[in-house]
Image (cartoon, rainbow, N blue to C red; front, side, top):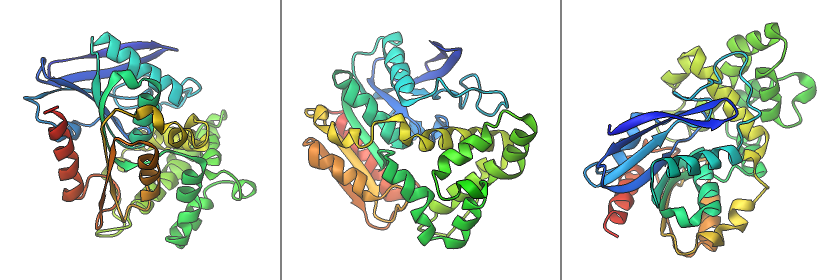
Length: 316
């Protein structure tokens, strides 16, 4: 690690950031998924750190950033996509970077695209995997239509919200439970029901390939579980705080920026369609489909394609 610190982005938020690799190398920024996962050290493995200067940061209210969404009294009203895009741009200026490669996955793909479309002159290249746009249709697919694939698991997920809300926006219903102003309700929901139910469903809908449903060890931590469930339901409940379909419609703003989008054919959490639609309007993007891969970089083939793209862009 070269340097690290906390960036005051206003609204009472301190965003953790760190820089690793070659201080004179080609700049890149990592946009983690979730929302709420935090920027783990594994992201560094996608880069040759003798060539790249890599910036990692924890988005608002997660990881090492403060305040923590795992705290009972946290307020997420100043945590939206617009806030996160502004945070990225403030961090770029803080670090004196003119342009950087944007690497993101899952929710990080949505945020990375939103950032690049608003600040195209700040982006040299884009590499994304498990691509999402967090549209209302995508959220409905994951929170409701995926029940056709996992009916028993989905019924338990649906039944985790009050009966009168089960036919509506399930993400928003969970978000309300996880932020109930009554401490007794909030604690019960977070510890005994809503947070665990949400994370159980997360484990389920990413398990479309491989060894089946395997509980993620990170959800065993009640603080992480609450943080993650609160942030994801907050963003999904509002379709990423984006005008619906805007990332696809405005993909033409990315013209001239080389991109590589890597997706797994068996990634039911992030169907190929979102990445495919982006490449129809973004002439400089390449779509790479890994036929036997699911969600994330667990597939060696997906990971290798991401590394190859990052390495190739280092030579530009």
